[in-house]
Length: 147
Image (cartoon, rainbow, N blue to C red; front, side, top):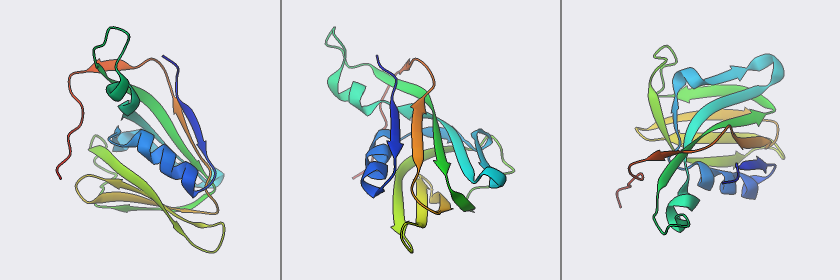
């Protein structure tokens, strides 16, 4: 299986990246904001929706997760909603990412998590990268959603 590496430089790219990251899981200890370099990074375990839909050569549909890094550059500020950074092992499940435009090309990228939690990144422009960090591993089930 090929490792995933995606770059987002505009809203359509971010939407595609968001689709790949739906149901990714992270712990608060695995995210950091580096104000001096204007960078926000999160290590996550993303669910491989493409693999779940297509299966493998044996016809089975194994479910996989991949350890990945999600990096945002040109970040001026970070705001957390309903996330206590002091609780370092809190687990968050990513639902979606969205962009709210400001004065072009700036705006806010919001990472929306289950449980009414979110991270808002004030950015000069959209510049994000998703990179798988190794081989995937099997998981027993796929995420289920109500509605």
